[in-house]
Image (cartoon, rainbow, N blue to C red; front, side, top):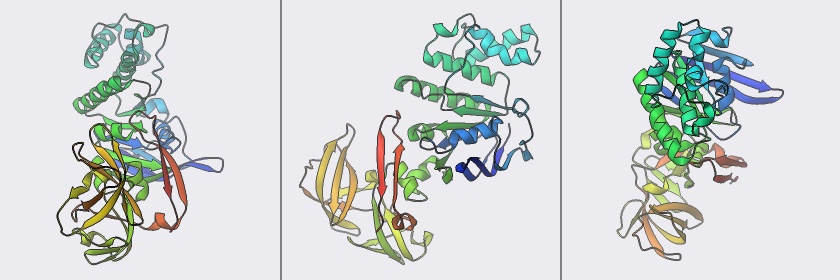
Length: 372
């Protein structure tokens, strides 16, 4: 398997930079998700890696060797698209074995390897079926088998599950992860669905407007976001400007204690805490603040509370058995060990973005960061 290194990669379409100075490295055998809203540059990046699109600037290296001048068919990378693109005049066996046939592999060997590959993607005995006789999930499995049978060194998946219903997506996520781990194949996976990225990937690269925002293990996007853009994309709307002095942050709702103080320099900052990390309490103590509930919504597995902390509005996820109603006064514990500080740059500019980051890609989350 190959490592993939992208060095200051850019792609311009006229005056528009679809991808701008992107640098990241995918280790051999790793599964990395390219995550971001529509138009952020993730598919453009994938096409450049595959050799289907020439970059404007930068370099792409497989195992340390530049592949910029290597034709797509010789790079050892294969791409599976959102649309399965099966040949309608061929049966399943011929579709899966097509790449081997083009390489001059003997028919008996092709038949043997097709059978083994269909077994691997859980479609044994489907060789004689036609594409129109298959479900959407089965067609995508055939497309995956067709890509894997030629034993690529890099597998590129461009939102292959976007057209499947929720249950099929879950099933295919599990299959893709199992295949990737068993074959130890270096894989890049494009998605706009944060849940999909977190479930599948060893690491996630979040792109917004062609720029890399953060490249890290999935949990760090929740616990240690690099900036407000990252935090908002992962559905955290809780931000509070303050001034860090040692292990204390001076804020409009009072001083807050910070356990991980050495991570950040003193000075202006933005403190954040995810809704599910906030605890409703009746006790006094460090980082306990008063709030008024302005909205309570039942969400099935939790209650989403909108609370007012003076002039600050935050979200809190409370247990479903918590008897809290609109207008109630409550006390909240903001854990010193979980508070996280962010750069203040986003507070000093007007930035309004709409991210489609719902699990099914159907819910638009409106994001507004206003100058202060």
